[in-house]
Image 1 (cartoon, rainbow, N blue to C red):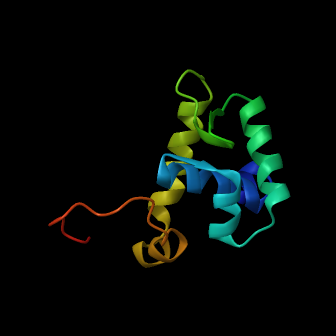
Image 2: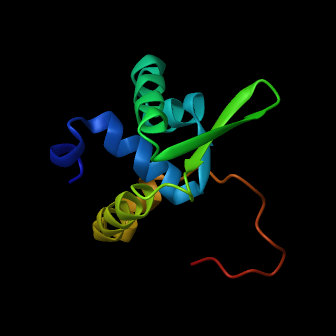
Image 3: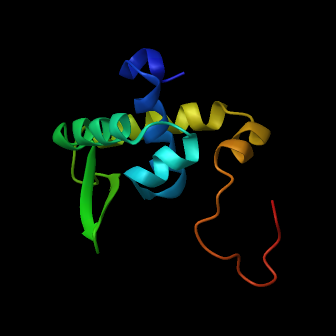
Length: 110
């Protein structure tokens, strides 16, 4: 979907992963999608240098998220949201199966 717009599959995976989780880091993205770490890092650096993403240090890890201050971030995020919503729920469940935090007690499973 987004591969044709952004030029490669890694860019699509990076943006979808960050959209789904809100924020993420390079090795987590590479592990979840089963891709090499170096292309993920390069893509994150490209998006950060263009202002779409912003990063912060969390210990020894650099965590990336969409840049709320960038004029380009909102349209890119909306485009990623359209692509994300177009993915069937069963496929989304497979792509983003790793939980990042425990489920609240008594919360229903969707």
